[in-house]
Length: 499
Image (cartoon, rainbow, N blue to C red; front, side, top):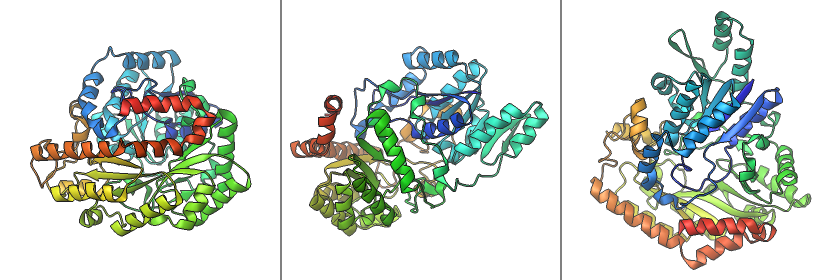
């Protein structure tokens, strides 16, 4: 079959910088290609001319997103129609995240104009599959949870089913999908997780349309595990059942070598939910990089309670030049509400270790958690200044289905669980599930919240713009700049749009 996989436009529509490639689609493409299908991946969100990079102010561009969403003559939508028409696929797969659900729905509508069957998957589908099937008539199938095996089985069933009765019988036996049949919506039982991640082919980076638009660093995105053992109240990790599955170190090393040979990549990013949860495995991984003289730099996400001095020195020796951790708040009460299972003391200790070892680190912070007070928001700002991260990332909480805070929001009368198709097209993404956009939190009125939000964002931006922190960022990437001066130029352009 000819299958087109699409990552819908969002950041590109509003002019924001969007790093990397959609790795979930590349993983899916690798499996489908291995079985002989003709695959093309269209990253409609790949933005080669970004004008914005300060993500603290991302939501200020949401009204623009809604306006351009409805502009059928916008160049991106014209491009999308042209690519779908020219490739003329038998099937289109669309990945869906909550924030850009409307873009996914619009692409599904475009596909139906071409009489093409549509499959949707991704985080939003795994959490709101029933709602999506009810409100979006343009989707034929949903793949819930991990997509590789279910999607492949679905494609085989579409090919093999000669009569409607045969297709129905085949579809009913595919775990992890939903579909329409004779005017009814059928939800099949969930699918088990893939047990052996090494059995999967590497992400098919070569199948991207216009892959020349990505630089070597973009191609260095790798997932070495799937899942998270924690259950933070703001994160929808429930889809992973608090289980972590790991690829073998051998398998990861082979992928790294392949990417180096193919794209010349020397700066990698490991996007595991928490890279250092299995300490022994990471020590083994670092030893392999050192022993095999694989001279790369890399960054990862982890937790403040999963780092120690010995581990950090080993990671640095193996090329780690960036670590990102969730600090979240300066309030012990809010931290407990988040079910983060860390403490402010652990955050302080981790910050000291990052500084001692000399690894550039980013701290993630947020505000507007249900029940959070103005005083607690100021505690977060003050805690950030105390820890002095090399970069302080700040966001305003948005309620996402499948999270504990979403349920708390419902209990407090702030959140509603269902939306219509029209809602997704007409409500700003940050407000998708709020009952009343004038009441996003139950501890202050909307005007007070807006003023506080503006003040905190401004303070974080000023902090990040200091010369010392900008120099630390540049120094952490100096080896990359020496190897690839073009990336230095790209970073300078991004800085200009961010400042």
